[in-house]
Each structure stands twice: as structure tokens, then as C-alpha cells.
Amino acid sequence: MSEKSQQHTVQAHSTERRRFLKKVGMAGSGAAAAAALPGIVAAAPDADEVVSEPARTGYQETAHVRDYYRTASD
Amino acid sequence: MQEPWLPEEDQARVGMYTLLARLLAAPADQAQLEELANLDLGDNPAGEIAVALSMLKLAAQQARASEVDDEFHTLFIGIGRGELVPFGSWYQTGYLMERPLSELRQDLVRFGFEREPGNPDPEDHAAFLCETMALMVNSREMPDLARQQFFKAHVASWMPDFFRDLEGCESACFYKAVGRLGTVFLALEKSYQDTSER
Image (cartoon, rainbow over all chains, first blue to last red):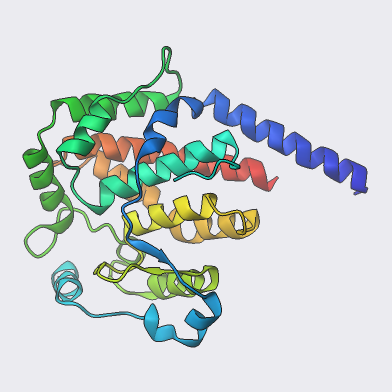
């Protein structure tokens, strides 16, 4: 594919995506977008650091988790 | 929380993921119910998303915070376990903490996300995944392809089933509307991502 036709394809996709979201009424959902995140996910301060410290994201067995595990698999 | 440089359609997507994350993370309180009851859906809302949002609006107008709280606990927490188990591993293998969770954790480490300290639930909780998707769509650094792969592997693989179950749950009233919105939105996300892939 030539560079020009590639560029054309990218533009076509972008137009198509916008048209798609307009059609399904996504724009009208703007009001719902004001909600704040629940804050249960944190950005890892430094991805490399996290990779070298897998324990940070590792499985932590809490009482809550144990209860789920025990009863959910019954 | 949307970045101003984000295209309008992506701001709307961040908003939907954010809303679903909020609704699934904890019972909606009185303030949130009022917010939803007063949703401004525009003059002439059309499309499945708008219909699902008006249903949620109506459900919020009729709901009391204490009932919503009870419903949330019956559905997701229960005594021992709730009517639904909102975890990806459970939906995909029938057990908690199985392979889908370890695969998800590997990807989260790759993309620099982790659990907020104090959040006791494993990362394959529906609310965690919705919040992660909101952060990913909102991220300037994250390549489209990586986001699409994450969606396919960890969201599209089970969350449509979860939302469908929520829609049909016997104990659900307010959360039926949440299930409907999730179903409609994820179907839309899937076709949206397919559009971007071609």
C-alpha cells in the first residue's frame, strides 16, 4: 500500500468511526460523562519498578477474597 | 476527568466506562441517584444508548438509596456469595483466581496499572476493568492496538455475559437498568473496535 493510500485509509476510518458513534447516539451520552471514577485502579508509579516487584500486584489473600473463593466454588 | 484533547467520541466512551465502573464498584448513594435521575439526555435522544440511559434515569427516579444498597449486596456480595459473581475468572473458568486473572495481571503490569491499596477485590472485577478501560481510552500514550487487544482479551471475553445476566437477574430492579446499559454499550464498543481494526 502506498503512503498516500494508507493516509487515505486512516482518514476514512476516522470518519467512519465518528459517523458510527453519531448514529448510535453516543454524543447524547455526554451528560453521563460527568461521573467521577470510583478510584479502585491506581497507575503504577513506574512501570519498570512494578515489573521488578511483582509482589506489588500479586494476589493478596484477604478474608473477603477467601470467603469468595470458599463459597463461590461450592 | 476527560482530557480536553480527547476527541468527542472518546470522551463519551470514557464517560460510559466511568459511569459503569462507579455503578459496579459500590452501591449508588442518594447523591448519585439524584445525579442519574436528573440526567440531561438532550431534546431528541435516539439510539440504543440513549434508550438504555433513559431507562437508567427512570430507574434512578424510582429508587431509594437503601433499596439500591440492599439490591447491590444481594446481587454481588450475598451471604457467602451473591446471585452474580462479577469476576472474569469465574465467568470464564467457573472458579475464582484462575488463569484469566493471572493473564490479566501480566497485562496490567505491562501497561502500568495496579490495585489501589485498600481495594480488596482481585483485578478481574467488572468495576476494575471498566475503570481500567476508562483510563486507557483517556491515555495519550497507550497505542490503539494495545487497547483493542486488552479489550478483546479481558473485557469482551466475559463482560457481555455478565451484563446479560445482570439484566435478567431476579433480585435486580435498579441494576437491571445498569445491566441493560452495559450490554448495549459493550455491543457498541465491539463494533466500534471492529471498525477501527479494518
